[in-house]
Image (cartoon, rainbow, N blue to C red; front, side, top):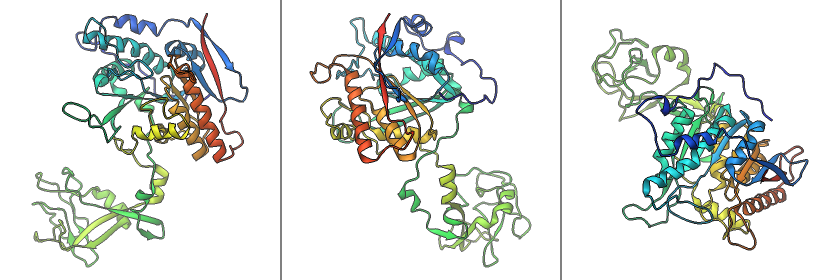
Length: 453
């Protein structure tokens, strides 16, 4: 079990909408829904397939009861929670995805919030102080989920709402063809959540075409038109031919010499990306390129024949990582369908999330020993992603999955949990066939049932 990192400061109680009179998310039964999280478990976890070598766990049964049972073991131990709950969009596949009742649409949302509220409260209790929750969600409940998470985690712990292109070929819909869903991200404590790191692919590496004694580098303009004027960022730069250059503007330094600076007087006075001090300290990273269309000015206000760029090195990007963009493309649901088909399960679970989506989240948090929890496990994508990412980077991540025993109406897999377990077993077998597991690599998983007392 991982230990929680030492807190940087005393963690405050989460700000909740309930604390602000007259503002917040309200629905009938809200108090009872929150109270559900505090109830003791009324069941026991019983091993279906005891496995002393198992690092991973799959739990078949009600996920709220499972979270109560996991609380003593996983409290403040989970680094990443990913869940894909019902979108409440009115579709019915293997599980209930609609909460309509005869009492009307408002109750539809209330019942969905009744489902989510206690589970999110318990999620927060299980997360480490540097832990993060990602929830896949659609348009129907995005707004309600955002308000609910603000209440449970605190609005200050909101990380991002990341749109994802989910499908490209559908032409359904009245006014738009639905093509997206969202990843809503909340930290247990945003102050302690490390920066995310995106993968660096070959296309990105191709940008680094320059090379010097330090290594491969790319360049970016030192002047960017979108920069707002700053007091210490407008100065002359000496070019290789001895001429001076400065961003566009109407105010110029009195001295005609390298580094002479002036305070911008209006929005027309543009600036460099670097402060005057940074320029003095990092001048060796500059690259000059001649250009007939340079936006830079020479003394007297004429156009400079030079453009000024700064180097950034591939080695630095590999070490520090890239910040991921707050949208996702190239990770569509048809990939999830293809992955199930490759395992002989293509007719079992429509619209499964792609393995690459959860792998991307694992890469973002850059924690090779993470405990990963998914209590709406569905087809088992999260487990497959953990196994695949461990195989790819030598990690020792552990997954804990929960899936209820809703019937499928099939003869081969009586419940969704049975399908989840079978998918994980087949994914594990395929990975084992592709590459012999490393000594100590966590591949084995145990199955538990939630059995009422």
